[in-house]
Image (cartoon, rainbow, N blue to C red; front, top):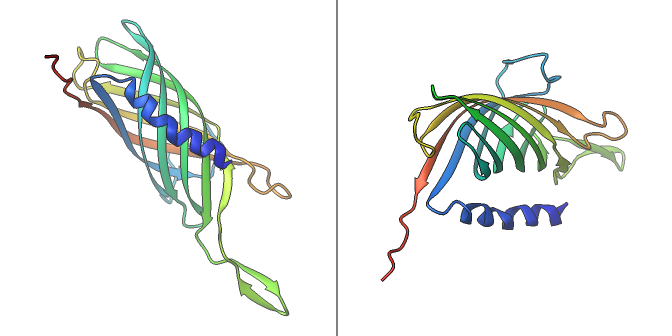
Length: 201
């Protein structure tokens, strides 16, 4: 698992290098819930999370593009666990002249979770507090979103979006619950950092 984590981290600079003049930055706040996907949209109580990432394009047409993302995220579920994750998604976007855009994303990632409550184990005739080293998980995901480009004619203009992400935590508890399903509802923004290219003498 650590091998895949290292590959992911060291591949992010390669993603950024391919952007040349403009680097997209995507930041979203989300509400996480342990729910069956597509049965609920907004859930309470709110379990907060934040995600930050970037993306690079494979192919761009007049109204559509194929792209890859690289993200880091964190969530806190006070009744279950907190987790930090790294993932990458293959995405497809269709953009209208009005500025509206629709996306679908298929991802795979690594997550490390920690219990948010104290855990005890019975040993030597008494209960003793356990040291929480966390748990390693894989988490495949599928997301759909609707967004709006504030500058309709610019490919590198800011975008607001609402995203519904469904994902599975695996392995969760092999002897009890092999997988745990989650949904994240994101509200986010994409903006671009424009780099100045060096002048040739």
